[in-house]
Image (tube, one colour):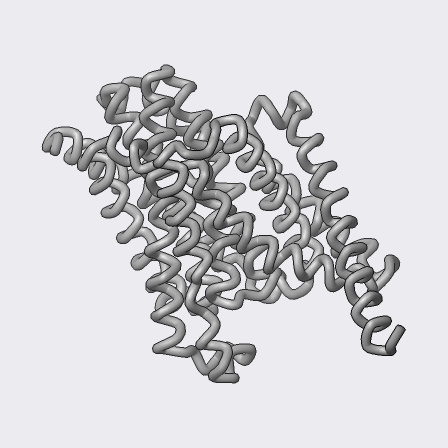
Length: 353
């Protein structure tokens, strides 16, 4: 056996050891998410995973084998891309058609304004690093933690930046999940169940938030909310392509890790294209539903692994340097989504395209 072969086997062992360690963390996160206190609130295993990862990363990280690090990094990057691709099997073109042009245009308008406005406010007004401003805006405009995970490799964000962005989703998404149904039941909003579902689906941070807030009013509102929300998920693909092209053409000199021009050539998110391909395959119904169900379960596990690994790579000390600005930005966007999204949903329902 040559020295090169021995080295390859050693590297493979280190990689496998780290991946196994992260998978155990993800398994624990999935179990915790099924506890009644979390299941009732519909807390995603992704959120629990990153919190567990952060806890480990800032306590025991330096007391455990360094040989696990390659597997942790692999889980937060390569495995993450695979999970985003597989997410496409949750959606179909038929879902898009079911909400019609009203749902499609409502999502496009709200996502565009939220992302562009959030990024500009974050960079120009609050002085946030471009990466962090984009991640926070994406988390609010598309689909929370999953969108942040998908955007993280495109903008080449640092782990603590992604964790901060996810934190904003946890706080404001949870607040909205409880507040929306209360506002509807108060009668103050004067919304039909259809318009309420459109409002929830087009403005809620996480899919789980949309499910909870929609079904808190009625099954009809819940169904509309979920479909409109999943349509927003599809918009992650063109958004990632656009962000990748923007970052490639207009590199930020302040981001030291992108000083090498070759890095910019790697920012085009090909996995976003494969995500759309998976949506197309799923729409053709050529894969048995039980197989699709297995793929979706595996995808949740991979996403949870990625969140755990991301948390493990997060340093609270580094996060403290950023301060409260990301949460201020997320708060501004949450208010916009609640108020601006309300009026857009009402107008689009009235037009009824």
